[in-house]
Amino acid sequence: MLRGIKVVELAYFYPGPYCTQLLAELGAEVIKIEPPSRDPMRFNKAMFAALNRNKKSLVIDLKSDEGKEKFFEIVKNADVVVEGFRPGVVKKLGIDYESVKKINPSIIYCSISGFGQNSSLKDVPVHDINIMSFAGVCKITGLKFDKPMDPNVQLSDYASAMFATVSILAALIRRIKNGEGCYIDLSMMDSAFASIPLHTSQLLNGLGNLKDFIKNPGYEIYEVKDGFISLGIMDEPHFWRNFCNALDMTEFAEISYAERIEKYSELKKIIQEKLKEYDVEGVFKLLREANVPFGIVNSVEEAKGIVNERNIIGKAKYSDKTYEVVGYPAVFSNYKPKRDGKVPEL
Image (cartoon, rainbow, N blue to C red):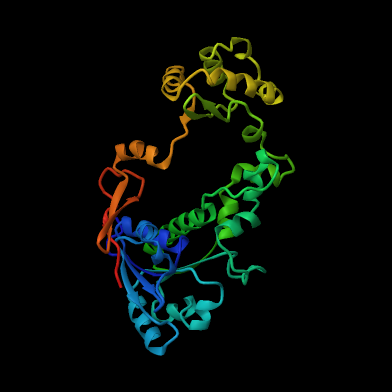
């Protein structure tokens, strides 16, 4: 799909490398430039393999004149540059967008940073948990526990990688139309904030926290005999009715959504008592036949069986070992993403 597109990566850890990994799986040529000290992520080979397969890699000291000269030789014929340094670093090194644009006017140059290039916080060093704290995500995830919580999922890293990828693809399409390159200034903070639109739509407009996800007995995790399940019933009378009928709770089948939220504690207790009578296999059969939105709380290892039905798991060879990695998740009718591949050695 992106055959013929050349991407130069100047990024470490998660956001930048995952962005270029997605582009590589879609067929782009990705050249990863690492400093003499190497990408710090190489200490964990499994994680590095997940974000860096099907790339080429070069060690270049960008602080040296020779290194800069080599960098410009590479970007002279590139389509995209992705960098993940703190604002001001690439300008100090002399490899910023304006410098690259002089030798390659059609370049698409994407900078991923914590707060963006012009933020008052641009000089603050951050990782994912820090951004999620600043963005309000830790407070949202901790609402049920009355204290901020680390979601233990790298939302801002992932979101910024995805928004960077979408932005680059949009810029490539625009360049086809008018021949112009562009500069993309992407903030992890903005990306995290943009990833919670349901919550921000309420909180920014003075409507309070979303009770749909906090005080809704139909949107909860419940314990069964040998595990846990999740329910996902929103303001959907037919699903709630199906659920109540299946669990012999017919006296609650016709109550309104507002009443369900009002009686949250009472209904949650009743539902929990009912579900504790079932094991995972039994509740799976019951709720599937009743046509109710539900899920089994799996481990990642257990979830692999479902994902493997669509052949999303790939193999990445790094040094003398092969790692399982999660590949590009879309299934195209006329293209197979490059989920398998080698990890570049240095």
